[in-house]
Length: 480
Image (cartoon, rainbow, N blue to C red):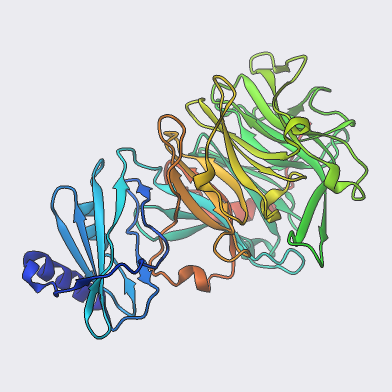
């Protein structure tokens, strides 16, 4: 009855502005969580519900659209649970919203209004992510989930309780396609699971000529290939360092997997013992393979000396061949910084990456920030608005190249949370906003991190029970 009451109250107040209380304007800044002031949002996003951080006996939020529509929401315990129906009516593409909060302790006061821009471009309807406790040594519950973005519904794609509480990681989609995905299972029932148009395969990807099973993936736009790194990964812990966890490679190479032939192909140029190569990603036309490369150092004794450059190499999908030399787009020798997680926008115009002081596993490096270059002329695009004093790390693009989702520890320094930002036609981003939830206390209660947020163009419909049966019963296809 409470949600219905809120909607009825909003409609009553909207029908008669005289119902709004007389409130004196205050110069005191408005303090809300999440901070949705001045953000740009897609028209198909769920209501940006927020809480007033200053105590008040009563509070109202008056939402006014550019077209003059008004929605009034009464706070419950300081929380504005904007109804979805009213929000959908207000957030038409290309409009803007002005939000004024009024609160009462002894007398009513009105805070300065803030604006929200509703962009013309929608966002993909789903994101997929892994939820994992950031314990790294003792864990037993994790899963890959999908969230519908125009409401608050979440469903499991796969949970490890179905496969003996093993590790699952590195979920990836071909051009945001929910019908073409993969992820790895480690330890118990180990293998790589691919799902292509409902057909599930289990792959055994360690060969006698690769240093490990396949690790970090990137699909070729054709769906015929997947680029992977192979890594000898180790983990350490710092008792007296802001970067609590250290993940590093003792060796790594880049390879490409042929989905149809179940074969791995590579080149000495991207699989060299003299270098650490990792984090491959294909260009949208499938003719270029980007990756990170660093001079090899003895590990772990010299882990702080390892700094990765952003490189590229030509790829011929018809001949299954690579170029003879690589090109360096961002040189660690010049920046004295390290690159990880390169991702190209689907329109091929921009490349977004993470940069930190050293190493490649930047999700625990507090200095890790997002950076972007324009590929046409290799120039930097200012993206400071995306960054915070804490970690910004993994990121992905929407299918229309107008939105990114990235993980950040800016809320508490411990858990990664998903933030979404609009990317303008010139590549310049807007202020990011926290993925909205049904109630504003959600992130304070959730003791899990959002890992590898990926936009998906539709609902993932594969049956998790079928995946579990395949993982447990099928011996798997041996990759050549």
